[in-house]
Image (tube, rainbow, N blue to C red):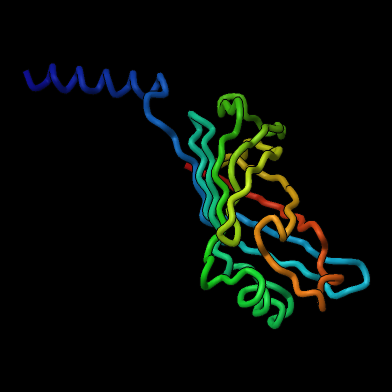
Length: 184
């Protein structure tokens, strides 16, 4: 009796795996986000975080990413301090998130040739939520898939105030680039 129950359980388990009965999450904790807010003729306003967490539910296309604001590194320490204390208020708003869905995502159709998908969701920065629709580029690599892309945001859309004394030194639109290697 025990052997027949075990056999039935194994058959059901194998059937569930082959019919995609188990959800498959792909994750990273070492994604990269870079932003660029420089204006020609002035000091570079750019930073990078290499410890971004992201998760993709491959069966549904649900996607989420989280970056700790204090994780961004600048070339100039003073600029990093002003970014955290004066602009992003990282003690009050410690993280930025993106939650959304990659439309028509089918992991079985991802190859080593990049394919574009639409991602629609919400971007939360500085405690303010804004809708976001962007193109993400996905491709298969040896140990998972990569998702890369870029988009622009305006600081004022997230209630980030740039003092008038430095306003001309910071771009009106901040370009954000992301790169995630997602694995099982």
